[in-house]
Amino acid sequence: MSGLDQNRTGFGWIENGLGDEIFTLLIIVSGLINSFSKEKIEDELISRIRLESLSLSLFISFGLIIISTFLVFNINYMYVLVFNLFLIILLFNLIFKFRLFKHYNS
Image 1 (tube, rainbow, N blue to C red):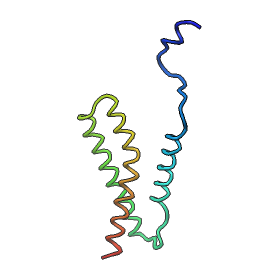
Image 2: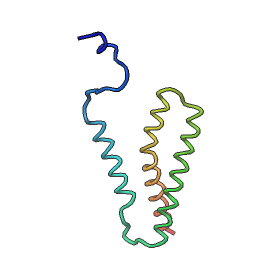
Image 3: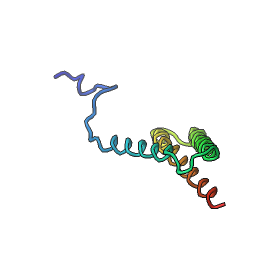
Image 4: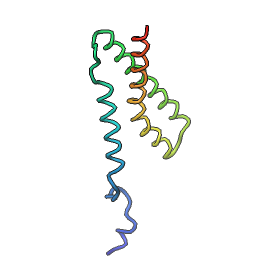
């Protein structure tokens, strides 16, 4: 074996468990199913609330990315970007369910 194998930099295989990948997949798929499943009464108003909630969650999410671009550095910035993947779905679900709650109770 040569010394090249020990000092190799760049891309390569890293062996780890599949737990993180499965957990990530479950969060994303369940969030999307929860976000875009049909309501009992699905009309134009519900579709509008859904669209506005998605737009607001995207604006908040990308606003946080813009702010963190100037305030967070190194590998921590990568953590912010990974967290943002889940934040979009989470914010959308929270905003949409809150607006539906307000709509049904008014």
